[in-house]
Image (tube, rainbow, N blue to C red; front, side, top):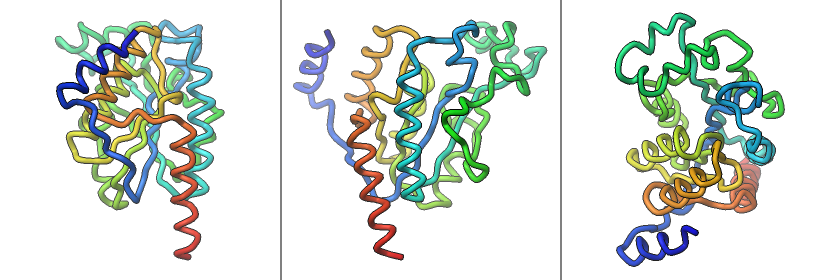
Length: 221
């Protein structure tokens, strides 16, 4: 469906490839119960493969010694932090308790097996970089490559990818490790992300890259 769009934009010079850098980090965007559990108003049943593929990437990243960062979105129970136009547009969903800080709804999926040294960032907007310490964490670790996983493709994944692109990182979106509530939103935005902001790359290639990074680390040791 989106191949004509891709060809049109590529004919106008869009779609250049960033490639992988030398020092990667993995970002796991919002893979918590609020987004995954079907009982949640925000939940989506089609994210099971996303969780499984993200877990696969995390396993290889840990072997390679690549830093891993998780994000969640959380607000106060009364919604004081979402007052104003932004809250009226999107974050009025805090009223259904999907985003309530300290509740099980914002707990990470246990299949991700987060470790104590893997930082969780509580973000107030779509991008993991917006008013968060993420950039300073990446700079402090000499990161040049950001691998994005999680949800949703049309929202926080897209916002984070655009921010990483604008900050001049090698930005990689793991194709089968990101997802959305609706397949059309997913496919349209994944195409646009690939043409404008990041390299949308199969999980197999991401895992192989992390394996190479791990091999280099082993040789250096």
